[in-house]
Image (cartoon, rainbow, N blue to C red; front, side, top):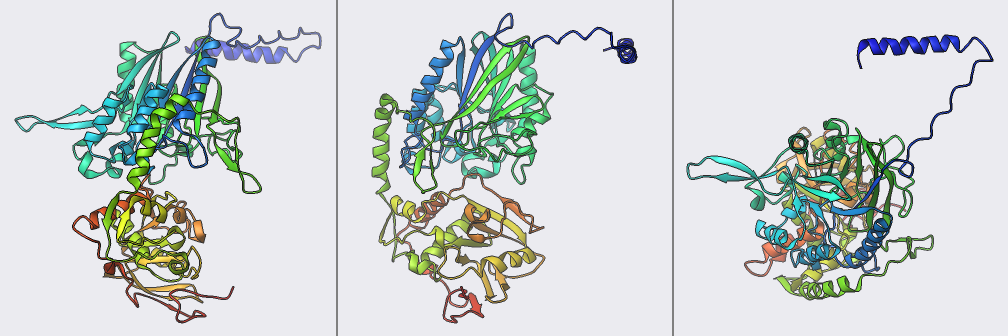
Length: 593
């Protein structure tokens, strides 16, 4: 707008304000016209974006009859029919992480999950970090199996020619153009940059994960220059962090939206953080009132809608868009539960919403994979020289070889100095001499992630002042590996002498592993997720390094050359000593009730 026009508008406004005070007989202002809607516009194009994310092997329904791809198929077909009857068209997107989480899927390299996605007819998916949990040959198999594109604009593969010159070429398609009810929609894929540190180095050594925000600018400019799209959407696996506060994680969807010119991306359909993105009115915090089946307000940042449908196919996200009056409008948004159940006041699981009948065809096609997965759970993975002790009455009252075996597995998986494992997370013994994957799942059934925390010695002492005094007999009682110290149970203090075999120092940085449940404050442990009580803390959330998978991999590795020598994991007397306790013979603190 030029300066003359601005001055003219200001002068007119001032004149109108002054003359408006002169008389009660002045004519009343004309009523404002009714806003244009889809119903009143000269033309209106409707389309719907359906989405899920973080499938993590949940092709089959849970033991409670929740979610599952067969029920998802039924729901999505019903929505597609409804949208078509109203003159619209739909597209189905995934925010990635199809792999890892359920043994029946893991043991079959997620084949049933990709077959299920084909049957449901997904249109595209973002590439998740867990797509790199296996050798690239597995990923290539999945890519060929999928009847839809796997999108990632910011993943490159290094190529070296005969002269030793290195070049980078995109490993996946960066985007795909879809014709949806006459509108050209570009869908661009992005993957979290953290994949470079979350993925297995053996599998991703030749890959480069670039900054999604910088890559987005290049790809969007390319799409605009070609004139091949009316709108640009993104399907991402980067995570949603309220108000962009990503902590130690790589920047996510909010940061991406803010890094671009306003509205360059019409919407971001995300994954990775595995949360239902339902926001408060100011878009700075999550809506505490959201419950399964209740209203959900997607995030809106810099002119970009941001959506995520929690995890595992618990919900199907439904975004109904309308294009009229030269603008794109979000008419409605819902997270629709897929046979999800919640506990009522009596502790009984009850259905949220209407029951969805699983699609019979999808169910029967996937059933053999479920049955084959069950059979594979009982195949031996290693042998042991003795029983691994995890009985509740024992593991909650003393250090045991299984408690130390699990803690050691977690410590070595993260190259940490010591490990803390809550005894309540050890649910059974492994009798041996043969160990199966089912044994592993019986011992570690909760699917906790293995977190790695780094802090200085002074903060470690402060942390252990709380953790090490958790009473024997409780699930909070800690199995400890890599520490030498004395615990004063009455004073709730510890005197650490050695960590990871090295002399303790208050200003030295140390790292340790901890189950995600306890890292978030479970069992009354200090909350490491907020980290406010420990100034030196750096928490690595690992985004999916699951405890049972860590334990299985450790058992397989240690048993590859013969039976695992369990005596190597027997607790060493005197490494952790407890004083000022009611029972001086106890292997932990025992204080008055």
